[in-house]
Length: 317
Length: 270
Image (tube, rainbow over all chains, first blue to last red; front, side):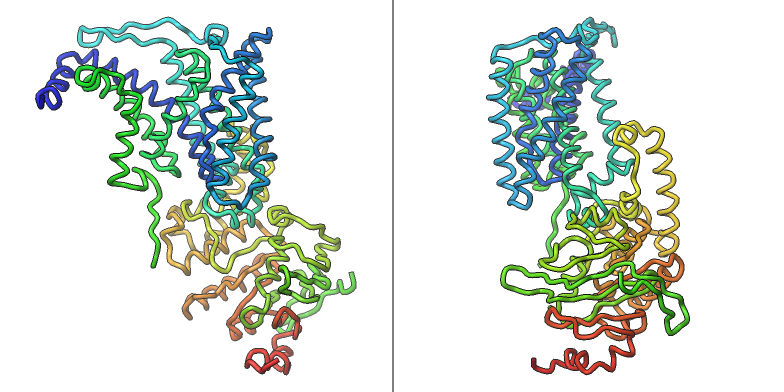
């Protein structure tokens, strides 16, 4: 038993390095998507202290809109543009109808409001697009679908072109967001608003503008993840689950930390894959990916309640 | 406007016309009257102080000027026209910068980033331009950075430029807050108790900076302060408030000899 837990898996890893690389690669692909989604949460949380429960359904909604528009005969890339437009309108509407009237309410009220948004979008999405599963328009968007086979250490490593594209696009998006937040005035305004509302107002930052902006960014992130995940698993309301995968990422990384979201996302993506393949399947009968991340996050929380990168709140008594 | 002509101060500086005028301002919170029918003006280039005992309504007045409170009655005139009710960020964009009594900085950001946010009111580049770091946004960022560096030099905080604000001691935080307000190149700079909680040395430093700012950039300054000695040395004209009413207005010497003011500070029963 101890052998199975502490020795055998590592022996396997060393003996078949090509297979280990395959596992790491697949972990990386999901990890970067988790990181991207978590970033959407962090941006909204930092600028408004709202835990955006609706992030998941936004992924579904974006993907459904894209596929739906294409089905209506709109060319693929124009559909992408229009979907971005829809996400922007959604951001404006959410700010106007939900956030603005609730300014200054306790955090829990705003959290409940995002649950409301979630339920509304589920119903609204189903009314418009129907509940049945759809296929992501991967090829029409020009996303390559073949694969490249490498032979490291005389073994076999299969890299799906779809996965490579996802990694590249998501990395660019994350890097772009980081640069935007750190080196532009708008980005500074977003970070500033998270730190102190009063001070932000006094330097001319408009709450409303920034809120629309962060919700729109969350919408863009939703669309990208929707395309990437939809291409692998099909477009259905089950896609929402990917956003809940971001929850342990947030627990691990801390709700305020952008670095935490990225590192946490990658960590969870890779670790859950490793655990599933080397421990989960041989010892526990598999399917550990659904819960492993949460257990990991709980263990981290036991030792660091603020997450690995979160702000430690020290109060003077 | 009634009084648009300037005047010459005791130390021989020429003060310009009226920049801001408060006309019969009253501010109520439910049944409580925080400010009762107060009028005064601020001239261009002067250092104007609002003083008064605790709870006199000084901070409320500053919040009215900066748009955080909307007066229940009365008018605010700014640069020759009546100001409609505005949000604080709109007031900021009109060139009114402020600091806060209990320091409102962006704790997680560096000193440099904090001061850079002061330039937000001068931001013209669109979102797309900023997102792509292209064209206008890039030029603006360079220009803003230059101006910010000048302010940082001026207030002698070069050595802590990259330090997260949360780690700084109190006195320096106050100075960073001043730097952020100055970076906006404001027409009117509001300082809410800039010297509260400081030791003597820090107070002297802050006084020097305030005078230098006024001198060097010609910035109009309106400040609230508890410390009578400091106020009298710094300001050209002083408004005295007590229990939400104005009880004195004039040069430091005039105010010092005003019986109502003396009573208010000595606590003569009303």
